[in-house]
Image (cartoon, rainbow, N blue to C red; front, side, top):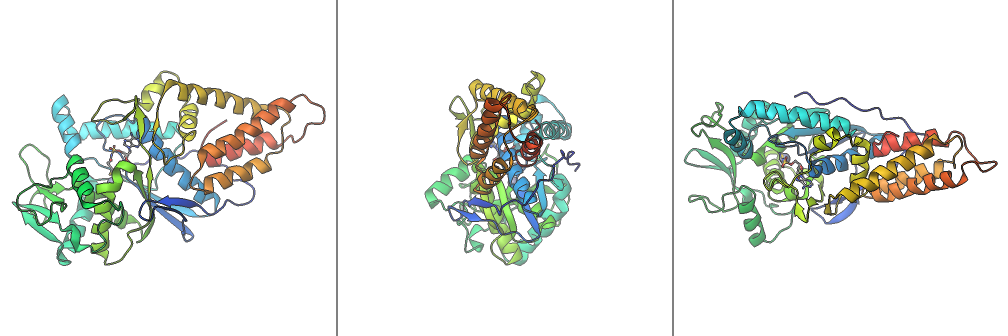
Length: 412
Ligand code: 5CA
Ligand code: ZN
């Protein structure tokens, strides 16, 4: 699929620091260890509704990964999917009478526009589930060869315990795995399953649903198989980072990792499993199924500067859950104005220590709030000294403007 256009990333003096990042599998903040090419796969949207602030926060978090790696001199190979065929999308199309493909195309296009407005760097490969069906079929065949697949009434299942490390991404007790699996689209109680957590690889044709030919009969891919199939189709194993929101740690990333580990016969599928916290509205996770949504496109239409939306997100550490409120946005609008005034001041406080502070905060598990505080201090000192005799560095405003654009993705 078409990705979206890249914003300009100014080059900065000196070099960025190696990125340390939280890994759900070990529960630690550990150094990432990419080669010259750093690889990342981030789970993309299911395009049946517009981009909400939760999606935006997750993609902005992983955008920081890409920006820190670029600043540290890596070539970044970023892959993201679009789940353009799946149960919730088909259900929504049925509900509204929309054609499912038209719905997916329309919402994917809106997502591209939202990501462009938010200065999110595009993935190098932006790949739909539908266009990946041949890769999924190959992958299922590898799992069959490994003896990890069985059928129930024409549907194919992955035997999760064919991976001896199954469970080691989210590290949840079995009871919790079962409960979450049932909540998030799984079918633990289906008669005939060898283990309740075994997950669907291929769903045989259902009346009224789209389906494709395969050696296993007509049907469509299960969800979990889609992402590691796409990742392994484009990236060498292991990938440096598998990312997504924390709601994907289990079962999605657990299943994808085990499928990949069985299909490739190697471990790990990813060196880091990194998860962004959930954005809430009125204390409840923002979600398409609950309908408690603040859309990026609606804020844009209301005339909110996308740079302020981005700053509102960056004021929260990516790993925590947080609430979207009007106050969060108002604070970001004020901060943006203060920063813009400071970079435009004729003379400013030297910017090098601020650049160093921003680099060091971001390299430390993407501490964006710390980075924002460093810019706040610089902007405040610049404001206080503006007009004072002998104040300092005429190029500082340009340096800080470039640092904020390159590392935080905010145009001042
Ligand atoms: N298509 C699948 C992934 S393969 C999917 O989960 N799509 S989604 O549209 O439901 O979510 C897209 C991304 O946004 C996922 O990484 C998900 O974890 C994240 N996300 C969803 N809701 C929130 C939220 N309230 N806060 C933060 N991130 C969220
Ligand atoms: Zn995914």
